[in-house]
Each structure stands twice: as C-alpha cells, then as structure tokens.
Image (tube, rainbow, N blue to C red; front, side, top):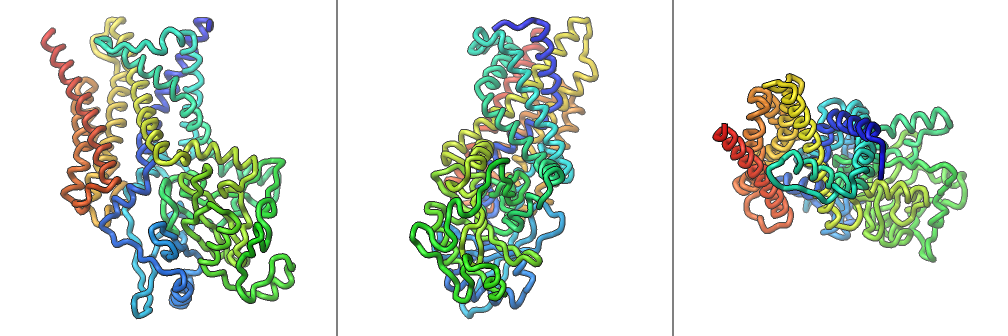
Length: 584
C-alpha cells in the first residue's frame, strides 16, 4: 500500500506524541487490568485468614431476617443474600448502610444464627488488596476522586484510540516487509521497534475494543444525563436502582463487594442501568409470563395479589412481604433455565417498596459484567421484570452491547480466555513501555547528531519518568501482595493504597536521583526482586501451608515468571553497560 511520505510522517508524529502522553497511564491500566482478570480468587487469597461467612439453610433465613430487622430496622434498606455454589440450599445474609456519594463500597455486616437461635453479627473485613488493584486499573493509576479520575481516564482512552489509528496508518506502507522482520541482535532499537510493531498489529482488535469500551465507561454518566435532558423522562439510572454494588472480576456476593465495573455492569462499581437502544422496546412479556413460564406456575406467597389482577388489588394487599429466597430461586429456575443466581440484593426505595436485583451467571452466554449477568425481579411474585442484562434473554440491541462489554471483561470462554486476557494485558503494558523507550531512543539519537554530549533536560525527564512510573507500578503492586500475608485482615483499603503509592513515589524519586543512565538497572532489580518474593512472603505469612491450591500456585508461578523476566532484563542491562565501559 502506497501512502505519501509526508502523510506517513504526520501520522507517525501524531502516534508518537499521543502515545507519549497516554502511554504511562495505559501501562498502569493494562498491568493492573491483567491482574484483575482473577480479582475474586485474589480477593479470597488475600482474605484467607479472615473467618469465612456463615451459611444459613434457606428454611432458617426468614427467621434470621425477622430477628435482624427487629434488632436493626435500618438493615431492611439494603441487604443481600449470597448463594455460595459450594453450599447449595444455603445463603449468607449481610447488610450495609449505603453512604451518600460512596463509590459502591460500604462496610458490610455478616449475619447468622447460633445453635441457640440467637443473632450473631460479624463485621466483614475483607482485604482491600484486590479491590485496590482493580480501582488502580479503572483510574489508570490516578489517586484523585473517582469521578474526576474516570473523566481523565476517558480522555486517556480517546488519546489511546487516536494513537491506535495513527499507528496503523503509519505502519501500513511497510506492513508486508516489516511485519515478521523481527531482528534480535545487537541493534536493540530495531529489535524493540519490530517487537512493538508486531505486538501492535496482532493485538489491534483487542486494543480497539479496550479503547472503545473504556470511553463508554468513562463518559456514560454525562451521556445518560444529556439523553435525559434531550429526551426527557426518567433517568436511566432509576430503572434498576438499588442493585448490587459487586466487585470487579469476582462473582457477586455481598452487598458491598467492591470492584471492576462490578460483578455488575458499569465500570465504576454500580449496578447496570437498563438503557434501551433507540427503536427497541423490551418488556418482561418479551420473555416471561406474569405468573407462568412454559407451563410452570410461579410461586405466589399467600395473600399476595396476582400481578394480572390490577393495581387495586395490589394496593389492597399492602404492605406485602417478599417471597422467601428459596421461592425466588425456584421462580428464576422456571423462567430462566440455566441462569444460576449468585446473590439476591434487596433495596428499600422510599415510596416504592422493595427492589430486588439478582446477580448470576449462565456459562452458555456472554455476560454484561466481568462474571455476572443481572435480572430485575419482583420480590413479591418472583417474576422477572427486567431481562435487559439477563444472559440469554436480551434483545438484539442489548446483546450487541453485552458483547462489547464481555470483550472488555473477558467474561466468556471460561478460564482459558481469562488467561489469554492476562497475556494480552501484560503484552499491552509491554507495548506502551516499548513505545516510550523508542521515542526516547530516537530523541537521544537526534541529539547526538547535533553534537550534544549529554541528553537534553526534556529527554532525561521523560526517560526517568518512564522508568519510575512503569517499574514503580510493578513494584507497588508486588509490595502489596508481599505485605498482604502479614497485615491484619490482609490489609484494609487505605493501608494498601498508602503502601502502593509510597513504593510508587519512592521508585519515581529514585529514578530522578539516579539519572536516566543508571535508574533502569537498579529499579529493574528492585521491581523484579519484589515480584519474585511474593510466593516467599506468602509461605512465611498467614497463608502458609496450602500451596497445592490452584490460586496459590497461580499467584506463585506468575509472580516468579514476571520477577525473573525483570531480573534478566536488569542483568542484561548491567552486562551491556559494563561492556560499554570496557570498550571506552
């Protein structure tokens, strides 16, 4: 393909400068994002020393809830029943007080009954490590308030998209000649350029999906607000308010289980909003009948009105009591076979009764969240009233949207796809690092041609910043997982955040103090050493013993591989530096 030389140069310059601006943010996003592909197993690993939640048989849950609401009426406003797969027919009750303006995370209290039937409440104190890494991924490493960070992340994502398009156009003329021409030898700059191009071309579809969906995650609030202002009507967010605020790549369970565009939908830890694409209307009748599904009668609580009999009878029966959890689960099984509920989250809405949002999974379909789909359910009848995010029951418009989100979260294809996303995430981080390094090498070469003995202040600044930020990110995350076994409860969120930014700032400061010529070697040794020490720290900490578990083996093996890679890079740089000094 032939493109005029001046056009290619323009796009190459755009690609370089936009990449330089966004590259360091994207490195943090991709490196942390690769780790959050297994957020829930990491959460369980980090919280292994905490006592597990107590499961209660379904038949005892109504009595448990009655005692809880009598002792703590405020609990009825926001409570959740987790349905652990390891304990069928049982649930784990928890409740929390939603804090105004909180980003999807509030202190949860686990509730159970002892042998005497007395109420037992335990403050849930999960480790903040996995959730912090997920938030770090969402906010591209920025320590600002979430709303501001997400807007800045969206700007970075837009620059990311520009860099992708301009990079492809700049590479097109030499595509056939240079695609597989990877030179591994003494010309390190040519080798890094070839690797950068190869990674960029073959992972281009993945990066385009990441850029597009990240823009949506960042700007969905302004988009919804604008749509409401232009079209009128109720806010999209009111359709499924009170839904769960689950964690990122972990299966939804608690009322306030943190994370990555939650087990739910949005990237920021909130339940999905049932926005219907223009021209599409999807009501409950599209998929389920009010009281019957495929000839199976849905359970009706005695005294609750038939939904088909009108509002008068509904109002006459008020106040009503939600169906017991086992009847909700049975109703879902009748209406949506194959959908496995993971949690039932109840929210009391002023003047509107109780809202029930069910998080669950169906391995046959892609899911809108990292590991969960959602159904809005009438808690009094068990009828599905919103199937917009229910796997296998969506309309065409929502299915298309779900496909894009599933491509971002890797919520399809099982564990193999998740490991593939880990590799793509680490490869993306490497892509951004090599992009910055190539720009620095080109600047240094141009400066030497002009007769400069030392690099300019701007080049030196970017070289130090690149080394400090990238290796500081790696070292900071590794330091968290090294410290988790020794911290109470695996480390609270503020402690984990403070530890990360302390290590990150230390590496950035060290990079500028050591200078661009020496910082790479020393910081690579530091980051590689910390990463390789993660399994060692875990073996001496609280999680010692069960190293045969898949999570422990995966954490240990991945940490060792990344750590050894960084140490090999460090020793190679040390050897090259020594050879240069000897030849001089």
